[in-house]
Image 1 (tube, rainbow, N blue to C red):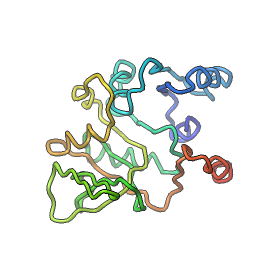
Image 2: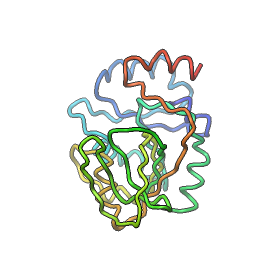
Image 3: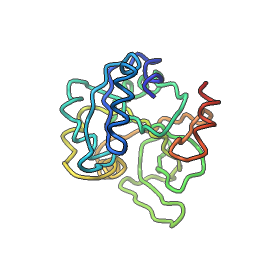
Image 4: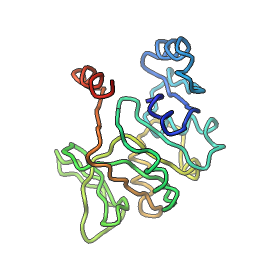
Length: 201
């Protein structure tokens, strides 16, 4: 993912570490950050999930008006330049990369791709902070473009960015960026590493 970000001119990276932190830091050091400037945000004392982890790293990111957040276990060939351009044009609190695919949990959007809610497709549970005539279910790809205004809305603790987005969706625009058709691979699954090596060789 560090090399992926470099393709789009992003060379300053903050990496959250928790599981296998020392091995990750050793790999970054041994490879000189793969040519990027990498700062570590250490979560070895407690795993804070995406929301709490972002809040802890606030002091490392506040100088930027917008920034990219990526889940480390998701690999994609999404055109990040196009996604950032859409974010800057619409100026929402956050833009979320999404695709039309089967998933146990999906975000629900209106016809303008504004976030309205979330659904657990296995249980039928729904959270709908914003109403719409119809809801379009799209699965999250683990890539966010976020405005720094979000930092004032984050509190210390352990929580997901999904919780943040659902809490803010009624009062802030949060947009989807549909990149259906792109490669998207979850390398957190055991059989995915060999496939990733083939797709991203």
